[in-house]
Amino acid sequence: MELLKTTGVVIRQTKVKDNDLIITIFTKDFGVIRASARGARGFKNQRAAGTSLFAYSEFVLMPGKELYRVQSCDLIESFYSLTSNIERLAFATYIADLTGYTIQEEEGTEQLLSLFLNTFYLFAKWGGELRAVKCVYELKLLDYLGFSPYLGGCTSCGSGDTAYFSPQEGGLLCEECHGAQHQKISTACKNAMIYILESDDKKAFAFRLSPEVLYELEYHVGSLLSSCIDHNFYSLDYLKTVLGS
Image 1 (cartoon, rainbow, N blue to C red):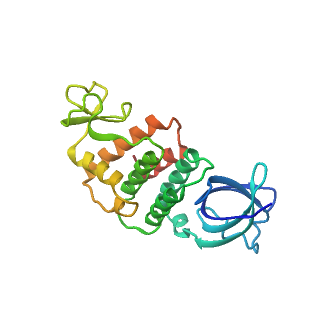
Image 2 (spheres, rainbow, N blue to C red):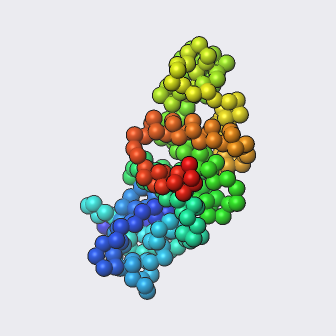
Image 3 (cartoon, helix red, strand yellow):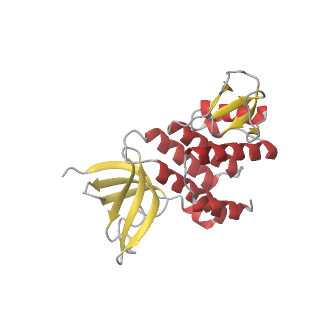
C-alpha cells in the first residue's frame, strides 16, 4: 500500500496499551484524521516529539481500514510554550477541539491549516489580547464551513441601516425587522467582523478594539457559533472559567 506524506498538527492524544498512542491530526492534505503511533510514548522513541500534543510535524502515514499508521514523523514546531501557561493552553485546547469537531477527513484544508497555525503562534508567543485571536479563528472557521454572516445590510429587507444582529437569521437586521430577542450591534463591531472576513489570514489579526467592542464581538461571534454548531465544548467552558468569565 502506498505511503502518504503530509504536514499537520496533533490536536488530540489517546493513550493505548503501554507505550502506544492514537492521535488526531489536523493535516494539510486530508483534513482531520486519526492515526496510531506505536511506541510513541517510549522515552527514546523517534516518534515521541513529532506525535506530542500540539506538535506540528511532517508525517509519513500508512492508510488502514479505520486508522492511519504513523510510519515516521519529523517535528517542525512543538508549540511547547503553550503547556507552561494555563490560559494559553486553555485557548489552544478549545481551538483544537472546535477544529476536530467541525472538520472532517477531506481534501483542501491547507488554507484553514495555515490560519490554525497562525492562531497557535499567537497563542504561544503574542503579548496581545488572545480573546481577539479566538474571535478571528471562530469567525474565519464559520466562513470556511459556509456559515459566514451577511453583513451587507438587513437580512430581511435589505436596508442598509442596520443596528441589530441575529445569529438565527445569520446576519444583520434593521430597526423595522428586528425582534425582542435580537441584540444591538455597534458600527465598530460590524466593521471588525467585516474586516476579519475580508482580510487574509495574517492581516485578519492586525486590529485593536476597545474592551467594550471586544466583549461585543465575542458575544456576537459566540452566539453565531452556537447557532451554527450544536455542540457543547467543555474546553470552552473551562476556558471561560480560566478567564473568570
